[in-house]
Image (cartoon, rainbow over all chains, first blue to last red; front, side, top):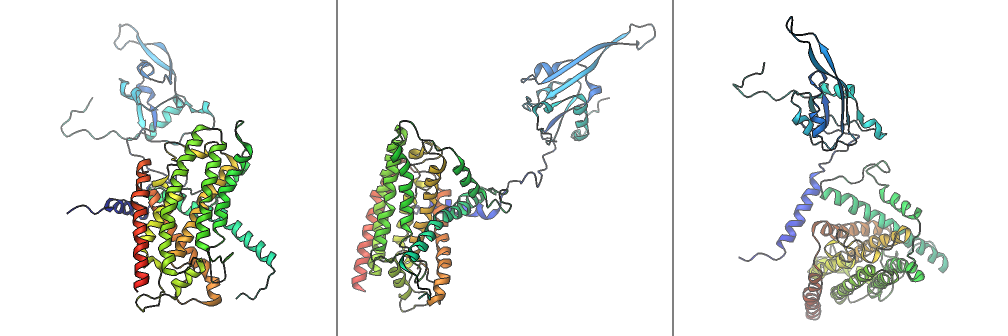
Length: 159
Length: 340
């Protein structure tokens, strides 16, 4: 049987009519808030004690929006009679969110798990200079970082 | 009849003021309900929600105020007088359409005996305004846009007129109040409770009228003159501020007026079963308004559903399909009118 002419047109009208009755999928933002998924890329948090000032994140950042400064410190040797150890101490760790494009490369390359994604997104500012988050502000975001997903059954836990 | 006795000039001033209020009012109403809200819901959005407090009702009025505040820019090479006159010509054609539309037994600006002929004649005046706008802009893209618009408007003028001829033949009159009376007093096989809305007998004509009106209004499946997403504005390229606002008001004011004419011709106009006399004068505008909203809904429903035709498809539809179908419709209507 040949197709009825205009059948597709009526079908199209049906689609728009049904969509009209279904209600909107948008969220009226300031009045109601969306719950972002757990792993959403909202803001990057810094776990300061894990950072070794290796500069990998700053060097890999495509936007060059990470500013790191540090200095070397001498620490007593682990064993008696040994050489004093040298450790890197973090002086400054800033991320300029006015430049950041949320690619997450810094989180990926960090060899010591010092950077984490947090789903928080409400940190816009009236002045662009205030978008520069220092290491204290980045440390505060750590509280909002979700727990990592559970390990697979039988996986060895890292010591 | 109304108890009030007014002199000619008083009556004329009142009628003019009413029509002057209807055009921006209807443009805002149609624009808000259909363009902003209905389209948004058809796209799973809500549309404006903030301005004015309640569901963004103030949005279009605010837009209008913004347009009025803008600088009046006329290109240096433009033909200033024609450039300034063009939107007024387009708006005047909308204004004149309202002269013959009856909103109740006594509520009509002028009951012309050639009412529908007058309406179709003044609605095609807008083509001249469009051509003036394109020509006076001193911009080749505007001119091409204007010619594209004129080609379309003239092509769809014909099926619009020919679709109406069926109604005229059946009603036996060209006066719009007369056509409403004919539907009110008519009967379907002796069953006269709802009169005889020509929507039933002239269903082919109704479909032709709506499709042609869609093209006359340059609503989306036929919106090549403006082609928002591709060509940007056509003949309106050089217009801004309140002159652009005039074109905008004319577009939606004409949508409302053509919907009113369609409601009058095919859906019985102000007539609703069981309401006569002075009550009809009170309820008539509301009934007509509801029917206009129904027809506007059809027009904008199609607008938000269908994608744009190609330019050759546009002309093919008018000349190869709509006009032959409307000629056959006139022929059949004429034969049945004589035979029955």
